[in-house]
Length: 601
Image (cartoon, rainbow, N blue to C red; front, top):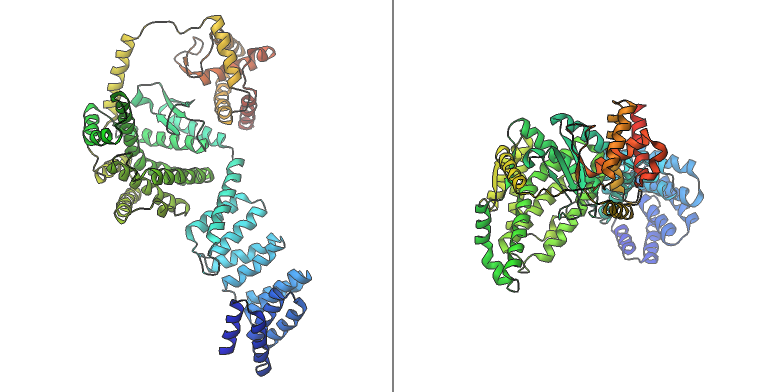
């Protein structure tokens, strides 16, 4: 036994001739030593490229011990790779299953051999059996997911990567396999997300939410917002529509739409229960913010004038307020999306992973650089770690260490995250606002924001709008014909047909709504609407404007939706003149028609 271990040590040091000399001595003295024969065979085949000699030695190993698991695996591998003898190789693999049904490593190795020769279907049962034995074995998760991927079973591949990321642990024999699993995880998620028709997902959720409060939801492109997307909830904006503004320059916009609709869903539930609240900035909170941080900012940024510094402080206060509100809210939002809309998981995973990397880079670039007050930096870092803890729980990827947290920062983040999980276990509508209070208090910033009932915001917003209306000049919005022509030409130049995928998706959704509305009207009604919209179009239609027409009473349209009704009404009522409108939405119309026809069966 001592000499056998010595031979193994020689192999580990790549001294294969010394190992063979010692192994030959062993089998002369102990001709029935199965392991000595098996190790000799492995050295001759793998390191000496002598498969025939290895074959003979494996016969000896199995003569000595027919149940030698690694000799059985090695013989199967040799027959598969060197002799293309799958039939007899399978007999040896079957013996492994018969004699050693609970050895996950052996089963995984058999599957890996099949994968090397691209026999992925044959590899599957061995990988599945290995995971049934040991559901923490990272190699088997990676192998099984790769098999599914090669067989173009993307959903199975994603789910296997997902489960593997959550449950697997690294082993000494392959410490890099988790890294390979994550790479495959991302690749599969991208391909699966590309194949998923998120328009139908959005449309389904949009229809569902619009029936709750009978308020229209409008998507509006806004390249000036600093965040990826934001919800303007109709009751707290004294508006007739819910508006989801999004920045098309941001990545993973499909996830952003879903995220904001989950925000809307929670707000609707809270409003219905008469428990909805809003987080606001007041003169008092702004004064508290300036009192706390102005001295530091004046000293650190002495090159800024009073105006620039004031604007900088206002931006900082707004950014901190948004994070204090959104960090706890987004935990509920992402959890709701994760549990209720599983089809969103690939794009959610990619988007959150991307956000994590951005947050890590930002924290490491800014932290302790004396750009911002230390208290504010710590709060930002702790809240990002809270989000990272949630990402780890959802998708199994631990990036927390990359924030380089201190013990105190990590403990505080863990405490705040544990509070979220406690609320999750007993969740009641509007609990998220209590959790916001807990987060704010934990960070010692309760004097910097104010949480008020929705009714207070609504009444204040209406009063503000009334005042603006009284002071507003009554200058007409209409353009001259020359200005309209130039505006339309500029619009056509900047909105080429089908180039902007997000705009095309959004327009197709609006067009589908128009088609369904026109189904309720006579052809004469649709013709009248087409002409009335065209009269508005003569003076130009601004995509960010608001419009209404007499033929559709009690309805205000956003610019994009109005353009969708314009296009569809002419496609139905005056199709021969449709091209003369010069509207670059034929691709959106094709997509809308596909959805419309599918829905109509």
